[in-house]
Length: 129
Image 1 (cartoon, rainbow, N blue to C red):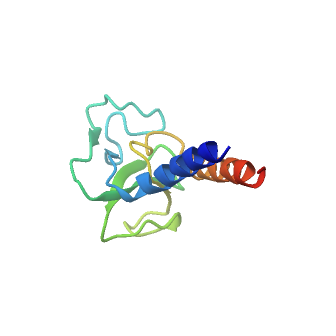
Image 2: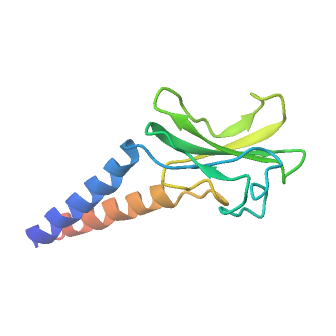
């Protein structure tokens, strides 16, 4: 039983550690082909980040025109704050995520949920002894 606990602890640790490494994100501007609500990664206006320091992907959606979407990334020296955003002069909402290419469609909290599930499962096995 301790072997299973050790394995689960290792998986949880790995899951939490993957968020500290650089990630890859989609990058495209408002109005670019493929960047709107019907996102297409193969669109001519969509690229992938070629940097090695991205820690978060962003998706900024206009609150006036939901098809006006900007996808980018935040480097290690920056922070990503989810919520209302007026940095570029438009009324918009910024979404943040921390897994590879997570800014393609609707951004959820799957990474957080998988981490919490792993921790709860590990605790279950540890305290079952």
